[in-house]
Length: 200
Image (cartoon, rainbow, N blue to C red; front, side, top):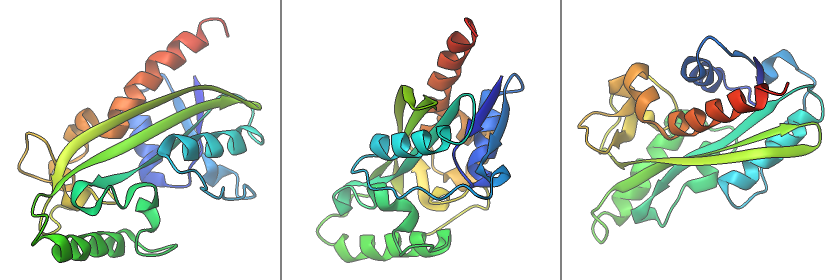
């Protein structure tokens, strides 16, 4: 089954392809350079995923899936949340977002020493002008005091999943793709798409 993912993030597309498996052919917005980036004005991950899915479905035939995901840190009252990708400013690279997160945690650590956090993912499926379905999932864990590991992207070098002592970036894609927020949401998506393909 062909599936179009509304992203230009090659890492994210690779995760979709790896988790969905060989029965799906995954493409993304890198093949459509004229596509205009969507302004993420939603207040939740699900709202932003729907915005991106509908925008891509307006220019791409067939089934489109979009995700919005990010990190919520309890000691920071849920920040960076929907601003995870631009926490250190619009266009900031991953390392700057991570460094800002660690600085902000250091400021509040005296009164809020706990570093519990979760990755959240919302997926929206659209075709034409219609949202067909949405899925959400989380991965619980905590934030390390310093980055570690070279795999993954985003906040992976500082996120230690529950039950582990190493970060996602240390554990590597084989482990991450079984535990992550996106893996859990994509597993729901895969079952839905298989059902959707039946009458098609």
